[in-house]
Image (tube, rainbow, N blue to C red):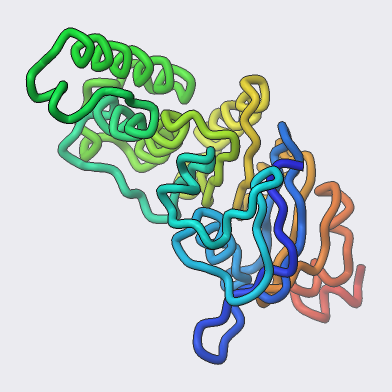
Length: 256
């Protein structure tokens, strides 16, 4: 297993947003994370990426405990993410936004860049070419020079994924990547996420579109009120009475 959570909790005042959550994400898997609104899914990604720290439990990347590390250290170890709310630089081009995500890979110093030394120029060219490759992976090569502000909502989400991939992560955390996309865009992006397995990237995916979860997830964990209430194959967890109750209420569960 590559990413492991053991009894992870996070409280805000008297509210437990994540409550004793434990599960493992295996290397090369796409692991779905589903649940009703307010179930604690985004809080969990914030814990894994180090934006907040747990009030209980442990998080491991491989054999290394990461839950007490700052976000930049966790990112350097191989964890990248996207967000519910798009966080692009609107005045930069699509390629420029992806290049920003490559900062962890760069070896040159600021002084070398300011002096335009040959090594810095070479590194800049490599960064531009890699940005184009990653935009091609998410189907946006023809939009590489377009300002992010001029891209559609769905295109901006794909640029965010390309930027996260620029960090060369071992684990990619995706927070509702298909939100705001039409059915055709959703299917295309689902195929692109599935293809990440081919290049050795492990994915932890929050997604409200259950057809996407069904199609691409190797395993699914379900949260409700911060607790993991089910885990397994997508078709198994969706038949689970607790899951049906969490999504549709007790009346629907009684009819299952």
